[in-house]
Length: 161
Image (tube, rainbow, N blue to C red):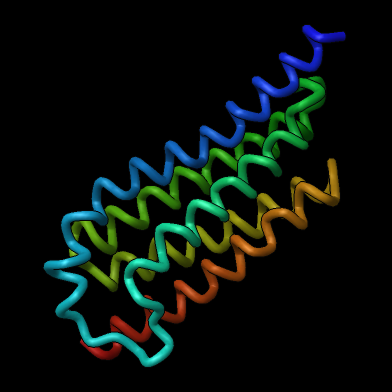
């Protein structure tokens, strides 16, 4: 029983670490530009302060990891679980890529293209997760809401600059 609990907690930690690692990779493209390029952009009125983004993303990455855990905790025994995991991985890669497109390339236009693809992949992930465990899908709702808000910010930055 203790070995099973240790395995479960280990898997939970791994599942949370995966999106957090994605966030760390994405921040490589972001950190240096926040106080240089990004600070000089014209931004819409609803733009949160720069310091608010990191805590928001940490919470979202933890929720993403918890959702992933609920999907894979019983293994990859069905094609449905394997496919859902692949879609999850694709959206995480696109999440990282958006940081590169927007911040790394200093391109709100490329960022907009990337974030639209990201939104589609998040929807696909929610649908796939919902077929397996509804709670896993619900844990991704704050993520898609935040990315919708980020899409608004991206569009407005593109228009204003």
